[in-house]
Length: 266
Image 1 (cartoon, one colour):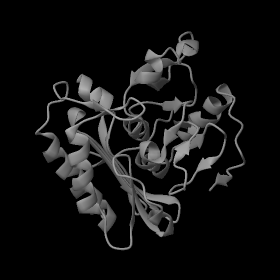
Image 2: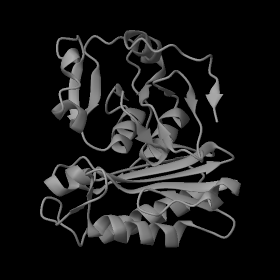
Image 3: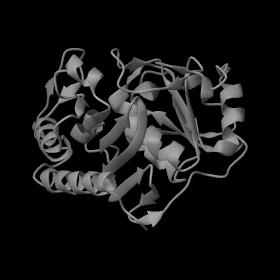
């Protein structure tokens, strides 16, 4: 497989993240609470600094959950969109459903992405010039075309709040999972058939995972029916639906999502 500079840079950054995370023990780490109640650990902060040092070059922009945002990124063509540790709550609890998520956008469109879940020993990478790989082997989304028996990954937090109770009697399997980036990566590689969240997410939550899925032939759409673009002034989006291409129309129909004719909101 031909590799390119962005592929190698993302791979190097994720392998460095793996080394850093060896210093920390998931399930046995102190956490503080950010404004809004989300947990924050030393690992989040250390990873953010290391990733920025490895990835960011002169003339590029940076958008990360753990870095104060700057409008300077809006003038950049290439922008790194990063969640240093997506699923921190699961990381703190000792659940193997967290990851490091790295995405790269050019002029509002994702062109590369990588997701590493060290706890599961899974490394997903793809670029505009390279096919999706899982641990170095080609991967692709599920070919399932019906919801009957489909494996749908649900937000563990949403499930705990009871937001998935309406789906308990559905004909598909609901599997709670932590990180949204990791859920998207799993769908991209056919480890699950679909995932969706009907609550707001930020660009750094979905950038890499969405690219992995779409680059491998899957499909995504926002809850409002629009396609997502990136490096926007406001980074919050109203939820995301994602699956293999054969299941997509059935899933969006089931969720009553009215597609906006492939139009992008930017």
